Image (cartoon, rainbow, N blue to C red; front, side):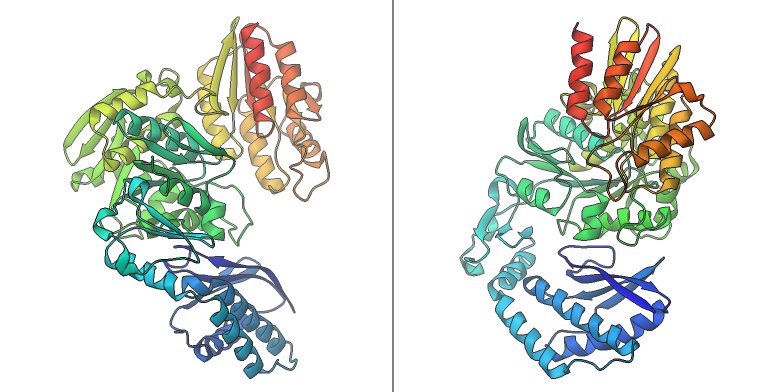
Amino acid sequence: MNIELLDSRRLTGPNLFWGLPGAILDVAIEGSSADRVIQVWSKEVAGLMKAVGWPVEHICSRIFDGGVSLVINAPIDVLYAACELNEVAFNRTVASLAGEPLANLNDSVSALSRLIASEGKPALLDMQAAAAHHQIPFLWDDDEVSVGFGKTAITWPAGRLPEPESVDWPAIKSIPLGIVTGTNGKSTTVRISAEILAAAGLSAGITSTDYIRVGEEILDRGDYSGPGGARTLLRHPQSEAVVLEVARGGLLRRGIGVERADAALITNVAADHMGEYGINSVAEMAEAKFIVRRALSKNAPLILNADDPESVRMAATLDNRIIWFGLDASHPVLHSHLERQGQGAYLSDGWLVLAEGDKARKIVRAEDIPITFGGVARYNISNALGAMALCSILGADDESLAAGLKSFSGDASVNPGRGNLYEKNGIRIFIDFAHNEHGLKAVADTVRAFKASRNIVLMGQAGDRSNEEIGAFLSAACELAPDPLLVCDLPGYERGRLPGQVADLICELAITEGLAQESVKLFDSPVEGVQYALNSAQEGDCMVLLALTQRAEVTELVQKFVAK
């Protein structure tokens, strides 16, 4: 029997298990029954919670392949103590299953009670309750607490909160707020949405995996797809409408960064980052992405892709109000939804259409949206449909929807590394961040429409992907019949593997896929591979540069090449 604690952490917002804050343990189990572990832990943790005065009705667990997650609910002011209590229960469980003597329960309860008393912040709970009473947005972290969003937001140091009665609650307001998640297309959809909201006259704020931005001002660069980025943006006085990119990692590690949103959009669900936080299948990944629905009231819509099988499957189990979008108006899911007077967005005769029941409004032609490359990039038509549906809920009128979609250039200045197309002397250069099979297949569909005489493909992969995921990624690249295939190592992204190991694996798999050995070339970095591609490109070629790292350097090389 082997039971190992993998991770202990706070859940600060709505999460995979429920809409409550709490503490979670991820545990690896070998040679022991997960059910038996849960049974003993449940008894131990319930006894500890009762002893420290916490209600015990919110205890849950989740079995996954190779382990289990053990979760308890706790007030937001004592979540570190909740983690400690959960760990004490786990240690007692391990000892009990091993037949070892248990630590003195009274000593454990006394230590936990002292920790809870020292961590407790009654003023924080009072402000949280008052905000809920007045139906005002509430945000908190270890350093700051705020009520309201945008210019009416009030923020205090976490240790110096006023009495709730002193707050001018009628003066505090919310702002339109949307959430975007999914496997691929999140960043592009968020940025399209910002363009639409700007066309509607709003100072739009967005978070993404690249930066946090309000209007045209980038507040900071980095991955802001978690709760911290959401708080920063929603407290910013210039934010008049906000769209948050929410990634899988943040959802699973902490939960959603907001308690309520006006709409949530899921672009698609596919295999990526498998094996982390107990997510080992596409079906489990769908459950993780659908966490965003916990931030929606009964009338706030969940916007879903009718062309995505996992979204269709999950939707059948939910009671949320749904808006479907899709590339085919006759899709059975979309069609039946509209017949029931539901809302949808779809492509019809080259037009992006918004509909409610049998009332349809043509918004813009797909070929007039720059990121569709004349209508051939169907994955970006899908992203545009989702953004259009989302922004219609956030307050954009039809004219603003069309104007924003037409003005979103999608070039490297506004959407770096995501479908950036360059041309010079009959050579096309396509830079994209596609990093999984699903995303690369969408890119391949678009590139094939260019009908290049030769496709030069550059690719690499991070070491935390499984061999199966790497193989599927390579197979998607081979759909472009690359000649040559430029395989590059990603220094700094070995993530548990030896330097060069992933690149060597890709080369081996490429030969297995049928590529000639002389057409597979290995490089130490993306920059070296791109330099080779630029030096060898000829008229009629299309270079597909999957710039997963060194993206700024790759883009600079390409821009200099085009400018010569």
